[in-house]
Length: 338
Image 1 (cartoon, rainbow, N blue to C red):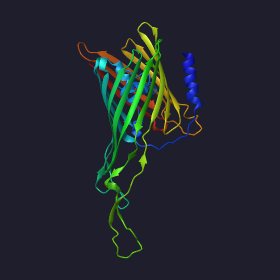
Image 2: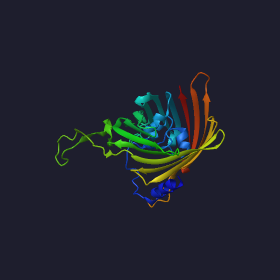
Image 3: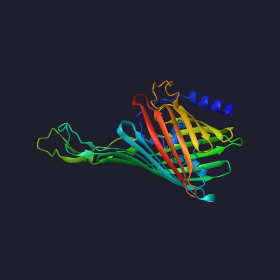
Image 4: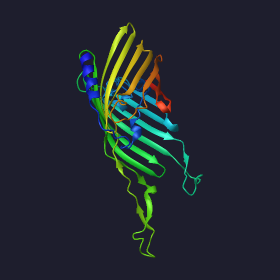
C-alpha cells in the first residue's frame, strides 16, 4: 500500500500543467459539497459513501442500503450562499438512483448605470443552479460504476446560460480494503449568455445621413467550457483501538482551468457516534510553475451520529475552511437515513 501511495503522489507532483484560470463558465460547480467531505480536505472521490457522493463520485451511492437524504449549506464568499441537497434510493439488484441540487444565490442589488450611479430604482439578482439525476450499480462485489446527468443554469438580471453535462465515476475495493476511486465531472458543452441585455440598436452605415440608425440587433456573447475535473483517489480505514477507527484519503485532481494539485484528509471515528476530521486541499498548487496561489487550504470539522429509536438515523456535520485573505468559511450538513 505504501508503494501505491508513493507512486500516486509522485505522478501527481511530476505533472505541471499550464494554468487556464478564468477560462471556464459555471464556476459554482467547483464548490465542494458536504461538510464531511470538505473537512477531509475534499479528498473524497474514493471515500464517497454518503449522499455527497452525488457530487464527488456517483458510483459511491451504491454504498447506501437505506433511503438517505442530505442537505448542505455554506455562507459562501462575498455575501453569497451555497446550497447542496440530494437523495439516494437503493433498488437492490437494480442499483441505486440519486437526485441532487446545488446552487449559489445572493441578495438583490441595485441596478446602477453611468447616468444613474445611485440606482435606477430597479433591482437585479444572480443565481446559479445545477439539477442532477444519477444512477449507479455494483457490477461485482468489488467494483461499482455510476453516471450522473446535470442541467446547469447561470442567471444574472435578464441574462441566462443553460447547458447539460455528465459525471461518471467508479470505485474499486482491493482484497485488503483499499478503495480506489476515479471520476470525471462536468463533461459537456459550452455555456453562452443569452437574453434581453444583448439587444442593441445598430446603424448599418454611420456615413449616410438620415438613414435608419435604430435597427434592432443583438450581441453574441462568447461560449465558455465548463470546469472539467478528473479525480483519482485512494482511501483506507484502519482500526486502531476497540470502537475507534481512522480513515485516510488522498486525491489527485487534474482540472481543465488550473494546474494539478492534491487533496488529503483524515477522519477519526469513535464508536460510529463522534467524528473528528482534518484535511488540506490544493497541495502543491503554490509550488507550480504557473505562480497561481491557492487560497483554500486547511480545513477541520466534527460530526455526530444519532439513531432515533425506531426512527431514522441522523448525522450532523460541521466544517470550517481557511480561505486566506477571505478568512474562513463554515458549512453545515444534515443527513437522514430512513
